[in-house]
Image (cartoon, rainbow, N blue to C red):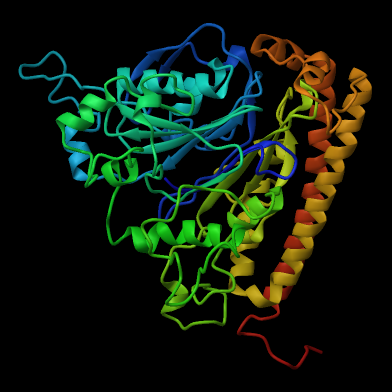
Length: 531
């Protein structure tokens, strides 16, 4: 799957939250309808079988409740993609990554080998299951981890035992930390903690550009990896450093260095960082510090100002506005406007933004912001994660086109607006602003209601760690106990439904508007009216 990820550390976000966000994009020429669901412990499998690789894995008997955004059509498996569990741990899986031949030669992918012949006949050879991949990761990991670090360690152990058939990047977050894990070959992996004061951009490339192997194999303060990583690198001559340097550069060693990256990947990192750090360096022209095809755009960077949810939505909707590369723009020419793969693309399936807020009670701390379809034309709305059920408008996505669910309604709107971008952009902007403002107000009102319900006193800006511990349980088991509040869950479920009802009304209005606008531009129109 082709996707784009941004991770925002707690000191880089506007409100002290950790934020992990990713567009899930379907393959070229495909659409992948998505659903928003909550998975209860009794619904979680105890023995899991992958549809694509046929690997079978026994799962623990104590899963937590969690949200997910699976496929509406399960013919290729679940593909849970993004969610938050009862420990207020969020997971985004996955960002498809690139690699190189040396890595695959040293640790080949674990791919399904089909059976040969027929069982019971001479010469029959049974199939050999493949490893785990994007289809499986969320289901295998999120229900069982109580911190972001635990998420890394559980997925790392599964990768070492079962292997994988693809390169992927996976994000984990809790209220304190964000970790980013990258698979390396069939069984190896590295993971790095996102600096609190920084954001990370990930555009389908192996991204980590600095890695402390000593820390990863020792204290694991900011880095983790497979236990044999140092020996494996040395034995296979993967370190490309000219001199013995620290930290090690995984992007050079494990990543790709192809011409295709300059069209498909690096321009997306460039446009995101150009927006979030416009004055730190020169981004345009022949003397630019970084250009769209630069291979050294940093993995992590401190922003020039705090990053908001709206900033996350904007960069993950980007089509190179204000540059010669915008397919809807008037700068450049027909060649430049289609040079680079945009972030906001036609085959977007869903956008999930998981926000873990330190200043709210555990039971209402996690928000999962959701958008479906092509991001330049949709809206991003906040749904609480600690719920009993999800609104049918977002859950009951069908495999056929209909205006009765949020996924397909967004798809129809995008197709209409793309064909008449200039004529419909004002309507889309008004829709995004109105729904976004309503969403923030709705969260504030719901937060206040939950605070009253729990007799919760909001944290003061100057509160120290001891104050926070006094009013809010912080140990994982205490967090789970606080989250398992039936009264709060019912209230948050109702709040999500109220938001979905408003969203349906406003999305219907936008569809009415853009359908009328585009219909009036049909080429078989005529200036004389019928009598």
